[in-house]
Length: 301
Ligand code: ATP
Image (tube, rainbow, N blue to C red; front, side, top):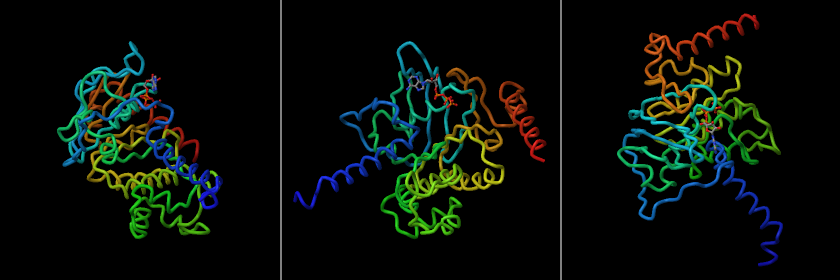
């Protein structure tokens, strides 16, 4: 046994196991940096997702005592609908996503999925129901195929190919030296930001969750890549309840509801056209982005 499980093998196995778990966790909005704050209640049940309706009801939250971060947040996402959050840095957008994944418990109020308070369900079943497409996807030091398969480890090869196609990365993979067996990550092929995001989309397509959290990348991709990514993002959100953090307002024109967050409070909400009509904060953000887009276009032409 000592020979079979030489310390080196064991160490390698151990490191890989840890690495896999860490990347998984890290993917979910960098929870690594945060401590494990919640535990399952002794009589926690499995979350049963029927339609994927989400509601936040008068949610208050603070990371540290007496420093309120979210103040009385209420909203609903209907089954298959999309709600997008916008607002300045530090407004609390990512915190809402973290609470939905239950990395923290709300201080008061409730978060309900299909009639079940997320406090009363197992974290495992909650996170199984939610797919996350993060800003910056962390890749394993493994093959690109494995990196996609990670969305659902029981997947067959055909499913992985299908997901790669859905995420619009299949043809690219075929140009790699070892195709799906190409090593990526720190020690392998370095993927671009757009390609990494496609891997996250492919994983989520495989996972096929009822609910999708989309954390739009702040870093600008070139407009062609951007358009292509939008198509695969639409594919991954289609028919799924989607809650997203948006930075480019052009991507949320069709959202069922846009919520403008500032200092932990909802200051405006409505559809894109309603908010433009309101001529408030959202409308000025929109004008600002339009003029900076025009400027960029003029500079690049
Ligand atoms: P950005 O657009 O920059 O990502 P955001 O709107 O997503 O910002 P959050 O990440 O939700 O903002 O942060 C909201 C506030 O909570 C910020 O003031 C931030 O400093 C604070 N905060 C975030 N995480 C923690 C933490 N773990 N402990 C204490 N404060 C935190």
